[in-house]
Image (cartoon, rainbow, N blue to C red; front, side):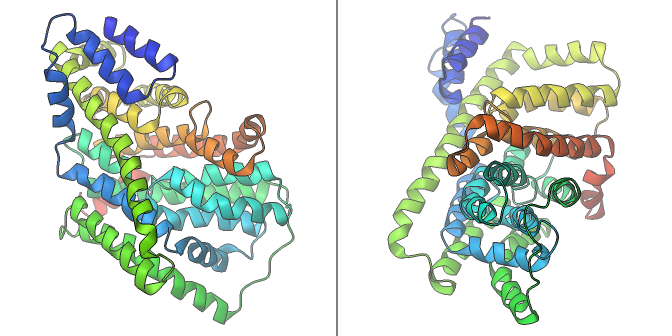
Length: 422
């Protein structure tokens, strides 16, 4: 009881999630059940994993690729593919996020990198600034769904019977479905703010394709080598860092040696915030397991819910609410150890359930008051949170529709993993 109260009070006053959890555990230990020395031991044990090394490496690879001049090339490739359609620049925004998803695996990074280019460009072409910012934030949610994805690696680490390759494959179709749903909404239900754009000629398209293939080779190799069993996710992440360095320094030559200290320190800072949350939550999960809390919750839920469909409806509602108040990775680390066994006991495919959880919590990135992508887009656009919330609502409803589709049509998620034998 004292642990829960301590945690809620600290979160309410704005304490960082990791410190709130650690102090909540310390309050529990203070009751005399354990020695306080056990807390740092369990935190360290929660981070002592070879697979976890993939997280800082993928973060670093994303930072290097962002600094290597690939953003303009990715946008040019998307422009060659869909820029001539109605609301062409809005379509380019969406499909640039799809391409960018294979490079960074981070929605916040996508919002920052793409938003700085698209929000001013769309405004010049006639789009309202708040619409451009909302579309950028909404399309960036695709990033952690299409592989490689940091949330997918974390989910696989939390669970013991879901593999990274299976989750990577499972995220491809839902990510593309989300992109198509956003494109259809923009194409048919949004006022045509801009005049149709001219098609690129054949030479311009060929140039865009050539420049776009070089950065796209990285996610193709990473995903392909993992699926083929040639490398582990951590080894693939190290190759991604090496490839990003070579492309930035020697191919595009837009990355300078003097930029590297800042990039490495930034990646280290971002990674440490993820890892400290993972360590403290792993400690909390250990103490909860010792106290029998997950088993008690599982028995309680199964006593009232015996239908997989009803369970999934309740989980969607709960995760959407949790996403309003808690950052996605922290929510995943806290809830998945409890919810995953319940889903298995109800016969729900573990890969399908994993994508539902990740998709839910990524939607939380565009919902206030904790929507990080919403904050980043507004920081670039400067239109105010009230306008941002109003502009994001139609895109939220589109993403909610896609969530319901993948929830109740599991074949959309499980098709590719089953095809490849996972």
